[in-house]
Length: 488
Image 1: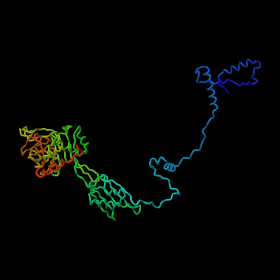
Image 2 (image 1 turned 90 degrees about the vertical axis):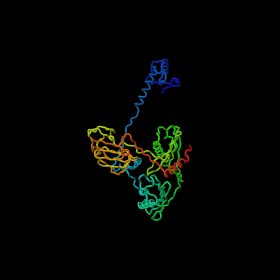
Image 3 (image 1 turned 30 degrees about the vertical axis):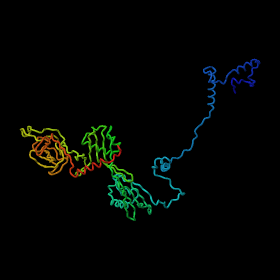
Image 4 (image 1 turned 135 degrees about the vertical axis):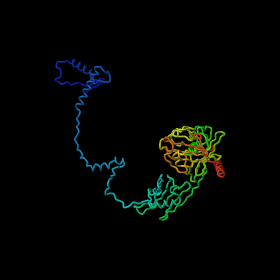
């Protein structure tokens, strides 16, 4: 309809209606009007001369044209459609059961699609002639229960357990043991599969293989060669004895035993970085490649010119560490006989009941009525009963001519001739006999003569002599000659 300014009106003509033509206009006037119309820019470039009169006129023209176009735009209205009838609860549940979402959550509805007439039900399905099963014996688990949980019938599980128990006690089979089973063919699916074979490691040095022979089971022992050479670990203490020993390969339990052993003879805090530790632990290596590390056998420390060597030895049914001279751990240090406070010391004093000066042959400890009284150290009860002004009284005889006495008890828990250990309860605090209130009168005797309990320490150390000492030194020499594992 319009042409840009550059295009002009070349070849174009404006036709006016006859009624609109001026009758008295001349040809010159008509040419002037056409020239003015040609100069009018109807299509304004809104990107140029922004803010000018022509620009505002062009903006008004563009807005008017857009409004006219919008006014002729068609109107769209929503068409009504059919609404599905609501589902019944049973139908909604069935639809949910067959949807995708329940499958993602494990199909918790338990529903499934029914078979169509095209599905042909199988009368029977074939089974494998044998299946291999590996089970693990759990902590506190029963041997027969493990077999039953993995498909063996109750009767066969009990029979196998009885056959194994005749070779090795079932309690000796450690938790975590792997059981490799072979289950055979069964006559129908309503019974358990028979156990054809079973193999497992009963002990570190013994494996068992069980084969079914009719209704019975044959147990075959498979011995495993084991090297029992101990493991020796040597190194420098460095910045941390624990870190150095762990780096050398010592187990944590052996390090704890090592620290307890050397702590009886020296302060662990006094060890310097240049000192050397030496320990020998029980070690077993099977021919099949497995290894087993046991407890600490030997503990040694080198501090310059000073060397400490300790060997674990059993004496009288008790294990303890003895030094190279055959002297064991010092034990039996006197314990506090009661939890209380001292109310009267050893020596001459004014008796609060008798009213005159008298030798006080012990120490009084004030404590609540009924507080437990323990033996200061191990020994044998020499007397237990009523003893005049002492009231309920217990006297214990110890090694080395020493003895202890405990007076004014409310109740006695031991009998004469009974052996007691350090810290064992022997009675309870009372106020029997000549007493002003609940307390413990504690006495110490040396060769039947009363001595000040505060000045006596009970120290007992086991000592090896004779043939036992010779065996001890031979064992010590053998262990200290073991090749060092880390080569240091």
